[in-house]
Length: 426
Image (cartoon, rainbow, N blue to C red; front, top):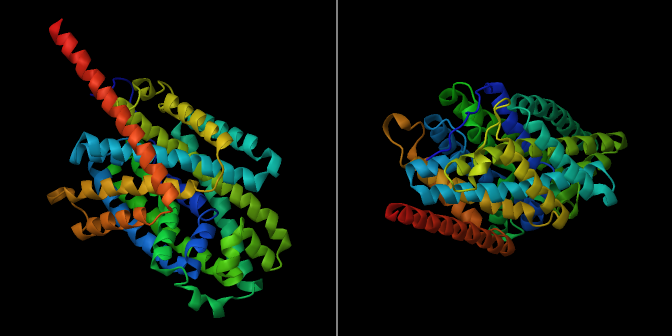
């Protein structure tokens, strides 16, 4: 049973929904994923990028098909509950919340790494989290408006990087071909799992289904449009950084896009790229807080998380308590962990989330079906393969956190049964 109270307002059109997806994906991936992917696969990250793109497309079609039928907050948490049962829905929601909470911390740390000197990074990262949670708490239209500005800035910066690499950078094309499989297929698949982190932004569009105008039409179009734009941008940037830096230098770089413009002799552009990277991370963090807050809202409505998180602000019509609670948790993570390993842990949670999405979409038929079933089979298999090839530490940590969620839900269900029994006896 869902909690009573005001519902969210439908204020987002197609353009706003696409922009939120772009802000989530571009900010999350361009400035964080390519270096660890190159460390895993060398030049084979190009193959990994293609694999991640195929899995992302299959997942996007599943999400779009489900979101058209269930235009409410919560994304795959809701879809899993409706199509597969309470437990698959819970596992999807819990996986999303833990994976994207880690992503919030990663984006806050990435923003601070580009924006301020080392000694100030953690405090500034916490301030960024709290500031953007405050922005979100005053209405989703403000979220979309700020994200629109950030996306525009980032796209301009990425054009500068591509041009600098093409005009001034030294080409490593001669060595690139032999590096395509330097890490073997395991390394390529691991790079695909890491790069998948960069494509997960379209989930934020589905989780905001209760706030989108004409959701049955808008959500599928927004998801696929945002994904198509990001695919083109990622391919151009991946080829540019590989050709200019080469796989080894890319793998060792903490700021590969900055290194590209520096290698091209565009010293003036280094500051611009740093500003763009900070803006991209900020845009991703903004959209992440909104998306995780709304999944938390949906789970709290069904008592899979504390019910006080289900409150919607009567004036601004946003899940303010859920977003403020998320801001506190992310701030603690920022102060206690570093950036290493966060991407792979986030990928673990998000891949499980999309596994449930594909399995849920497989149960749809007739007028509910918009895409061939084969796409859901490919998406589900791809999620499983990419999960098991992630770094072992991320897998073990992910399993441990999943167990915590399962045990907590079992305890809550047992308490509910006891209360029901006592109530019946009374």
